[in-house]
Image 1 (cartoon, rainbow, N blue to C red):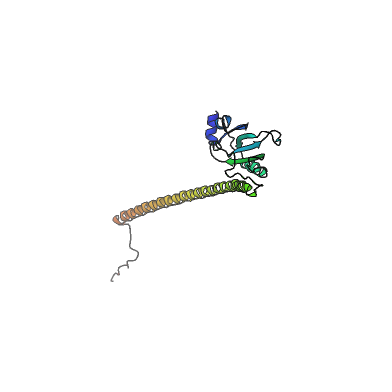
Image 2 (image 1 turned 45 degrees about the vertical axis):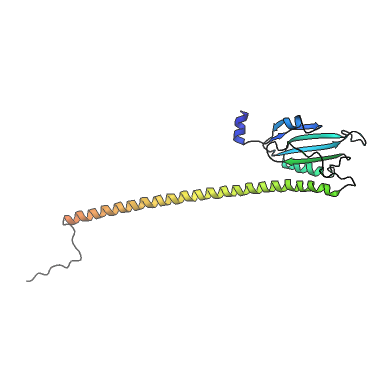
Length: 212
């Protein structure tokens, strides 16, 4: 029954799912969930620190979570972590990232390729802002494409209807022409029949004059 329902509703997205794992392995790369129809994004969160209390000097480790999400959930998750996501190894940080496509969240970003050893660098937030903009614009582009496709479908339906109407008019004209041709033939046959029977009198012929 579930497979039949999925056939009619369309293929649902699949995402890797896990919760508070200490690395991107085991459950985080082996457990797959079929998302709900309205969930069209895969969301991954990465925490680095001494959870659950984030105590200074305590041993640090990764806490990774993955799940299905909507576009709004992704935007909110990335936006809420902008001030926390610096990926500096000696800080406690927390980041979120989203992607679209089946099992696209297999890989995640665990650290910065360019670790800052000095004070806080504001440019660390710039990729996150780009990610938020990409998510928002990506959704807008999808909506625009869907709207354009609907408009194209409407135009195609209108064109098909007009073509069907034109075909009906042409067919009706053809039937009328056949009917007129048939009636014309019948009329000509009747004229010939009457002419051969001597029943047609030329009204334009002048009467003969008789001499007395």
